[in-house]
Amino acid sequence: MTQNLLGFSQPQLEGFFSQLGEKPFRARQLMKWIYRQEVTDFADMTDLSKSLRVRLTQCAKIQPPKIVHQHVSTDGTYKWLVELEDGNRIETVYIPEERRGTLCISSQVGCSLDCAFCSTGKQGYSRHLRADEIIGQLYLAYHALNQISPDSAHRLITNVVMMGMGEPLLNLDHVLPCLEIMTNQLAYGLSKRRVTVSTAGVIPGIERLAEMQPVSLAVSLHAPNDDLRTQLVPINKKYPIEKLMSACQSYSELGPRQKITFEYVLLKGINDTPQHGRQLIELMKQVPSKVNLIPFNSFPNSEFERPSKKEVARFFSQLNGAGVLTTVRRTRGDDIDAACGQLVGNFMDRTRRSAKYLQIQQGSLV
Ligand code: SAH
Image 1 (cartoon, rainbow, N blue to C red):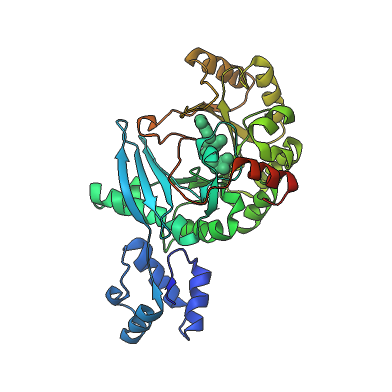
Image 2 (cartoon, rainbow, N blue to C red):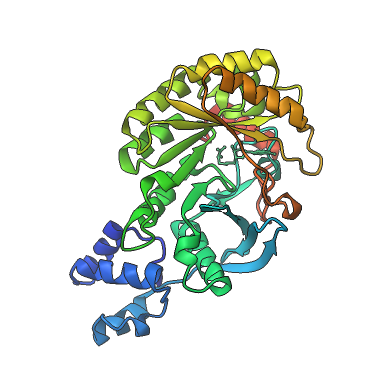
């Protein structure tokens, strides 16, 4: 069986080469070929010995997934529909801004958490992405951007956020090697501050991330009290706010940025009243934090509404006035369904929602 070496971290590649009886520095050479040169054919890797190239061709491959559609928004946002070997499809989004370019990648096919306002969750859950499929999204995006703007693709992607489909902290076995590749100078060489993992609040995952690959952390809070949060983000039942805040406090002592970003989707009349604002301000005092408000992005059959601009401004001023560092996320790419919470992909083996609730309640999902 040929092994796909895309998505192997440097230590994993060193292990692979040692099994072949090769020196560890081969891993460094291979990483540069794959991620810096975009070379996938071993025959073209000229600093490897001829015999090693032949051996690698026999036992290994470097195979990214495939882009099947490229959508371009009027605001310059790109969305790629990416097809995996098994026919499942996921989405990856590139958001260019004046001084940075952010790639938003997926970590699972669908999502098991079923947050009330998220269209990915409504689609159900199929499976974890493997490391080659996660890092493959960077590989494809660099490649696609390179076609559009040769020589500058590495500058065009300055930040990576794991805010696409899925819950990255439920798939850490595959996410961790990818974070190593993103931040490794032999590969994409992004600073840990510019790589962000976003979580709905999986506490053991936050702890493991802190220990293994502390990158920037974003937490999808969305409600300032447990009653409301459990309705909006059902995993709150298992990992309630107080415990979550204490995990965030520990993370902020270890992570590359002291501040944790708290994402807060604004749902008209649900979590955007002055009372919610007051509760949120109290919570934010517990942890070095900033709040990123995301006015709700709608999707077919969604039961929520986006607050008016005036209401968003009011909530913002309330937090800001109380000294909470707050930003409002500008909606990007909604004409191509690329905005937060609008990603759906196209996949098979969806679990039914009712079955998922049962699993969460029984604690078997997390
Ligand atoms: N599971 C992780 C990664 C997904 S990130 C997490 O929950 O953080 C996607 C971000 O977009 C999350 O903050 C999510 O809550 C938010 N989001 C989901 N649906 C949305 C919608 N319809 N409008 C605006 N933001 C949404």
